[in-house]
Length: 242
Image (cartoon, rainbow, N blue to C red; front, side, top):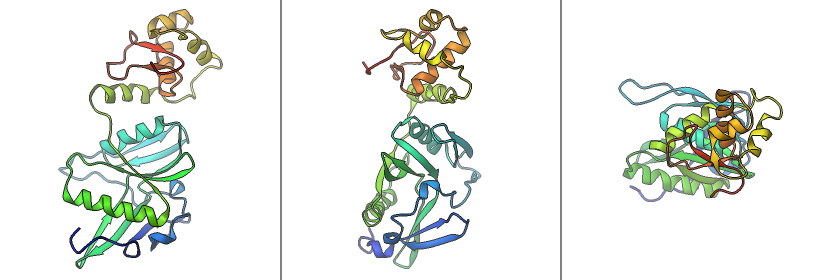
């Protein structure tokens, strides 16, 4: 990094507290701040001429709305929501700030989440790896050591896996389930079989049953091969991944 490595005492963290007041504190003093419970530092906005997308992505595991400023961030948010170890999470609740050679620098991680009881600061790897990104990774490492955070760099799914993830994401809500239907359908997949045949064996209406099967795959109660297109003819099974 030009000017030498950044030290922890040079890094500040800006965020909105529970009362909506903007705070800026040294990174070594924010280890106990529950960023996963805080609002975004700023609402993301689409930039003219850039590929961006703003959406409230619902986190089904925690009933939170996450404002994502890009499709890459949204797609990583989908992966987070499917991870059973991830609890509360927030999108863009903090910004790291430091100065180098008279210039101010900023880095806003995509998410902060509790994962298996540990506070995880999550960045989305850019499509193009630049010197700037590599420098920011170095700053993240210094900040995480000072604050006691875990750092995670995510990449979104692509191709067929992303298409499948979107299908599952659309079926992620458990709110529409009729009591007992999920157990009834899951029992039909003790051995691998097509989703369509399992729905028929459970005597469920086709559209309801296929959506329910997708919900069970989303929740990892059923499994399928995510490297091939997901359809009612796809094979699914319960138990261990094969």
